[in-house]
Image (cartoon, rainbow, N blue to C red; front, side):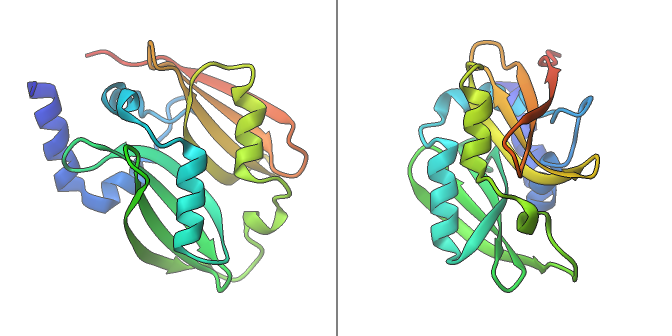
Length: 190
């Protein structure tokens, strides 16, 4: 095991769940800076994003996906982190093994505050948004997140190419399915 991988594992262990959740928030020119992590785990991914979504929703009945992101666990194995919103407004984090269809665990995060959530305004499913951008692009979906952007509700879909870990982040209108924006980031090699 290389020094780079050992350092990455130690950082992940120290950061814990907060660090894993922070990865889905970090951006580089509007595109998540996860290329370094994807570099090692992406080739090991056997469970596609669509299966991880289904597993997460089955784990928390009557829920809706808010976000899904690919990361790695403390052993360096790929894992999907899904945030789902239950009918009562409670958010749950579901971890799905990305090598085998197996749920690692579920935990309650928080209850959504008052007001309409972006999920209530979304008309298309995350899988539909991903299909809009993966047809013309070659790569694997590594993250999907429902968010507000420029007064619209959008699914932001990250597609990472396996060969060179190039990440493209697409904003897909969550009501119409139209692709609104594309941001690109090349991997950083230290």
